Image (tube, rainbow, N blue to C red):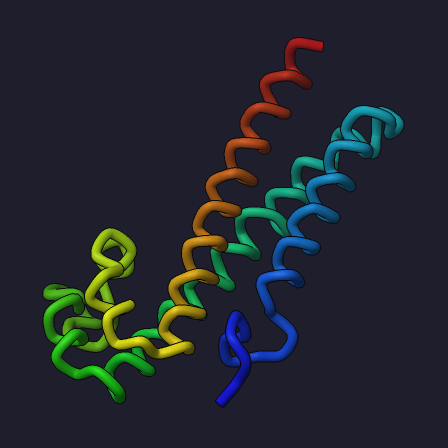
Length: 144
């Protein structure tokens, strides 16, 4: 079994994700504030691709892997918390429902499920933070 906080990959650990977010955000802020006019004009496009879009892609991948793992190891929870509509009906967890009712998943005392939950919540928070940062910097660059 993989050590805690490593979800399906040795590359995307919690520490690596945080380091990536901090480095991309710092590059965006520094290039927006101290870069030339041309660099600061294109830095929001760079950040939009490598910030919230990339992090949301990681989160989406994590949701599919988490759904597969729960479907194999806890089919009763999969039935209870799966999406009940659309093309992925019964095959994908309703992840917002899972994040709100973590007690049922933590009661299983499975390290991988705990790691999935922690990494998923972190990714969702970073997506929201990076999207908000993009909006705030866009407003500030329009003002100044």
